[in-house]
Length: 594
Image (cartoon, rainbow, N blue to C red; front, side):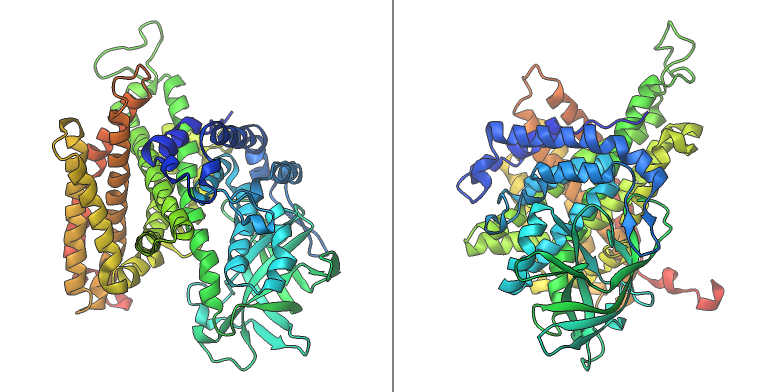
């Protein structure tokens, strides 16, 4: 009943015409993502998403994962076979280091593939997504012997990975964690403790699972400075990289969740499990943040991906479902009623989602490209700018794209009316699956506080000033282009509001920290609107370059972008007004008055 069509044309338009990745052909990996090769990769990924993963999405949700008496976990019917196809296609290796068997292609291309997978089956996509996070932590912080032991198998997809942070008594405040690491004579450690909410914590997709675990070395100081990072495989690895004995880390329980039922979210019990230190003692959070920041971009992508597939199905339903007549007279004159697509409020819901999807995709891919430039260009100025943009925009993307992605999934469900509330129609799964994205990898309120409390002040405000300068340069390029005027004006209005809010925070946040806390979510959303307006301005210029084309794709782009500028950008004024009220009314009630 549900369907998904991978937006290959949209992605190709972004990569080729908006971001113009061909100009980076001299950089490592970029020369291989032009022309026929790029088309072949995108088409093959679309086929995997549409023909293999989407058909087992609803059934996977209904069946869920199963924990057995020995603590092992099996995934729903079809998942193991789908993962084997995923591995056979070489998808885990796409953007990984060739020294460990990777293909070395840009992360931006890998992001495009991940979007298709997440739209088709977000629970499935989490398994290889977490593995790539483990890869990143090890390649940046692991000793050579750890890299040689684990990375080739993770890159090939033969082994999967996880990240183990949360404990029953601590989530965001990791300084409270209690998992203990006891040094052994051979240089290893014995890990004892319990971790909860561990996505892909145990399953039957791969031969081994490589856990990245935060723990406190015995005798280390309290708080975050005493936390170290360890690698603890499900099965110990012999010197020749063959599998050895079972490590004493087991799934004690599968969490009973609102959504993502086909992903095994485990309580993992460590009972003197053998682990090895990754990076330096006491620097575990620093190493884990490599994985967490990548995960936050991946979660932002989930918000976009679920908004996209929910929109596609709601739009198809709206064109088919007959209810009532158009306010301006019958449109389906030969039928008993008009399709609900004629009703302005249905169009509002659809266009809110569509304009978000296309603008959000542009900002997300632009940001990912900054990450590729950061790692592939030696020029110090470019490297610094790219790193600043990645650091600044990560909490914006994670918070805004998941907040709005969930909202759009709910609105798509609304278009189905009563059918949207019935499980067999499938729309409720998108809502349930999207809800967790606002919580994990740092709840969105925490992302907002990270943005206003840390990212704005870093390096004397350099990052946000660089972003403003990027917008100013874009506006100056075509300041006299009348056809671009609505997009220039919308972007400028949003940027001006964001700049004003930034100055207000700088002046009032330090004087009263509650002002920063009260403003944080509104500031993040204002930043998100500005970021998407920036994305739409990039899109509009590329679309106008083809305005005389007979292909309606470009005209439709401009119409959708104009909707965003006229109907979404003005919402920023309300966010600014709330920011400027400060914290007084928000903090006025005593705890007893709640």
